[in-house]
Every structure is written in C-alpha cells, then in structure tokens.
Image (cartoon, rainbow, N blue to C red; front, side, top):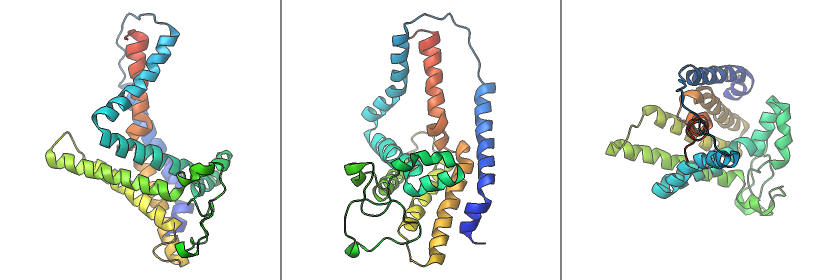
Length: 262
C-alpha cells in the first residue's frame, strides 16, 4: 500500500471523525460559554434590522480595505475569494472526488473549473502536453470567457501568492512584535502552501511523468489536505469557516436586534 491508497481508501473516515469531534468541541464552547445579559429590547423595523445585518458583515471588510489594503488584497481576495474557495469546491478534480464520496455533490459538475484554460477539465491520468505542443484552444466551459481567470492554474498561483503574503506578514509582525503571532498560525499557513504546491505539481505530473512519482505527489497532496481538514477546527482557518460568521451574527443579534443600536 502506497501513500495514495492510504489517503484515498484508509484515512477518510478517521479524518471525518476527527473533524466532527473538533467542530463539536468548538461549537459546544460557544454554547456553554454563552451568557445572555438581560436587556430591554428596542423595537426596530424589519427593513432596518436587515440593513443592519448586511452592514454588520460588510463593515470589517470595508475597514480592512481602507486601513490594510495589502492584507485585504493578499489575504481575502487572492488567498480566499480567488484562491482556495473556488479551488476547493469547483475544481474539476475536486468535484469528481467529492461526488465519489458524496454523490449529491455531482450537481455542481456543470460548474466545474478546468485545470487550465487550454486543457481538459480533468487531467487525472495523462500529463499535460508541453507548451510547444499545445494548440492553445480554450476549453469549452460553462464559465465562457471567464475561463481565462477561472482555471486551476491561475487560481492556484493566486492562492500561493496569497498564502505567501500571509506568511511574510506574520514573519514581519513577529519581527516587529506587532500583535500576538502564534506558532500554530505559521504551521497552518505552511501546511496550506504545501497542499497548493503538491496539488499544482500533481495536476501537471511534475517532477516526472511516471506513475509512481505521480501517485506519490498526488497521495501527498491528498494526505496533507486530510491533515488540514482534521485539525481545521483548531487552526486560524476556523475563524474564516465559522468564527467570523458566528461572531457577526451574534454582534447583530445583540447590538441591532436586542439593543436597537443604529
């Protein structure tokens, strides 16, 4: 049994169990540590409550865009919005894998993002042709001209740039002693970078095209992704997955809904 078989056939149930345990632990902390403070509720129109909900989520993004433009572009735009989010959920290979484990996910297959703007949507068994041999005919995709942007190669590069920026930003903050920088933050970011790099290499059948190397690189990519999923509730990425959304909903509920703040 090689690393590919280990990652595909053995580890998934354990990864899901560890992830579920971590989620249950983190959510239970929110539930049991919640303290409801009695306040006299101020009535507000539903339209203002809805506008307040939207504003509660947008305010930190607007402030970040104004005050920390580099972090807004490198962290939010490149790393998340144009990086890991579409790569994880819509890349053709990932859609095929998720559909294998969870068949209803196949409804997203028509929205799959191809590996490259000039290569087929799935390149799991054959390496991409060298640039000199490619016809450079754009792939037919539901995304149409947007395939120039919405393709695995470009999104992976953007994500790697984004995570590299975050690592550099953390190093700079640690050097200047600005804020609290945890060792776990570096570990999570380096793990994500390794996942992106090995995924890019596996897609292009690098560093060599033989099946043994390909299975090793692809297996390493999947194994590292499983490690990240298993520990995700205890990493900085939990804030983006759950903490931010819960925190803002709680802020809206407490300040806008209960207290009637403007």
